[in-house]
Length: 498
Image 1 (cartoon, rainbow, N blue to C red):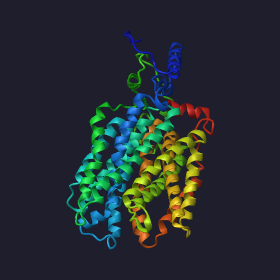
Image 2: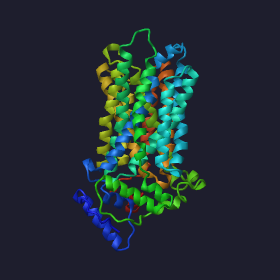
Image 3: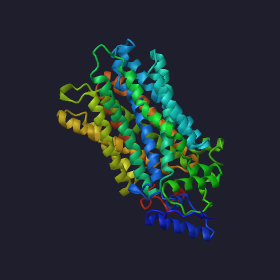
Image 4: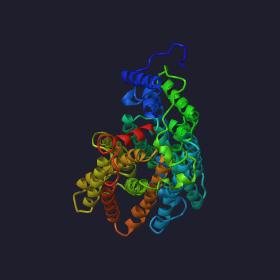
């Protein structure tokens, strides 16, 4: 059963321990869970509890997030230049421009549902590669668009590709991580998106800040540059793995173990059996595999999952609206009253998300998923209402940064929490539909920030504050998924097996 050639020993005492447990269980005729197999394959034996294989996956996810965040936010960032280029007035055509900005979120809403199902039926790897091709193609073609309606259509296609790529990328990373390292992997994944915001701002400063006052086509070159990280990710895509959870959902048990052994080789763990009987688990009862069609389509709104699904949609809707709304506000800063210009305001907004993501990681690990998300939503709601008061400009800026910090924390927490609330046979569709809910909120964000702000500048803060407060109360109904803080032992075993 073992490779006869000499191999280096597994790194780390923890990996050796889990490998011995795996071997002992096999000798006793026991089946092995995916969680046990991941530990035995060195899934937590390297830097910060992640193996080399897991770090390589995270590196590819960062490349994708750099382009995704940059391309999604690009239009709101260069809206004045695009309006001038196509002969539109930013005040008289405010509604038309906000609708143009919203097309990417409408596409995201569409693509997240369709490609989320594809991730469950055809695999995480195929969906991620298809989405990456779509992001790259739509981004490059947008730079060459010659009309406002063509630009809007290409932005819609970009959103469709992004909708499947982002959530599928997260699932692929999460399903190769152990329970102890999943929260930290979520931190790195979310920080990739935050770096994407800063990447857009700093690149935009190079292309647009020092341009001629008569030149308004710098946004084309900026679009090309922001599209380059996903090109590099595509060049590396043949290396992308399929997840063992998806193979198990399809009844392809041996391929699931081969996928795990491949991760073990990258993690420098070699002394493993040729075949291990992996546990499918009770989530297989939800549907007959990921491609079961009818049973999966209704699974999210049936039985105990109905309330979880609806509350998760509300959580993601609010996080999407507040996150994209505040980010777009930063990208429209004019530097008045000694404030930052739009380049540095957007860069700071993106970089501020990183400590917010780190706070989410610490909070989820120490206090649980629910407490972290609800607390972040509550503080952000209070911050939005405080911003309505006549405080000094410096204090209002601090409150605004606190709100963005907590919004980033709650959105990051929503990713990690949602992935643990649903079984693997429905996880792709659950993440896809939740992503759709977030994009619906993102689609409304430009209308709130651009169109409604023309009526009264306080409207965005009122809308964001009310939604955050209501969602904080509703999220209390979702179950805790951290072991020892509300999740029962059977629930944890089921979740870890998948």
